[in-house]
Image 1 (cartoon, rainbow, N blue to C red):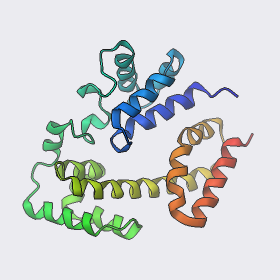
Image 2: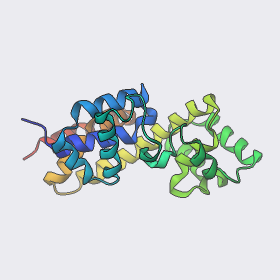
Image 3: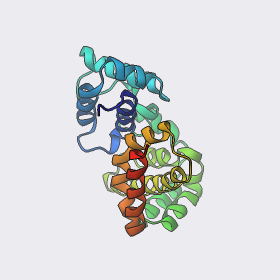
Length: 217
């Protein structure tokens, strides 16, 4: 069966949003965008949140305006908060971080273990809580230029993503199945396959249920 354009569009949006943690960065992501984004897919991309930004980026790639290993500053996901090229935004986000605040974040990152308790602990730090919902971007901005801490941050990001997907998967499985939720899960199934095994047998069982969910009629 031919894959729906809406599912392809959601998958491309997921890649776009996660470019900063994908091996190969924009070179890898842009190659996938060019390979899959035909005119019909672009129309579906535009319907997604921030979809116009992604659609414009793809058009720039297709025209050659943007090199295959790059992205225009104004079209970056999250306004550039997650990318090292967004130095100006990162400096603004981390304004007011004292040496003590930086040290508390660094200690928490170095002590971090991929579980809910450590995730809650790092989120509860005053130096992190000040960023609100943008706490992951705030930490990323604060530690920019420290490769050892950025490596730790990626573990925190992956852990937060795993728990978010775990909660979302269980919520979805408690809802009546609809074509829309099936399409959303199908577009995100690779992420579920990446993160749910972190939860052992329970994660494997939930992943099996998700696979059955998207194949149900």
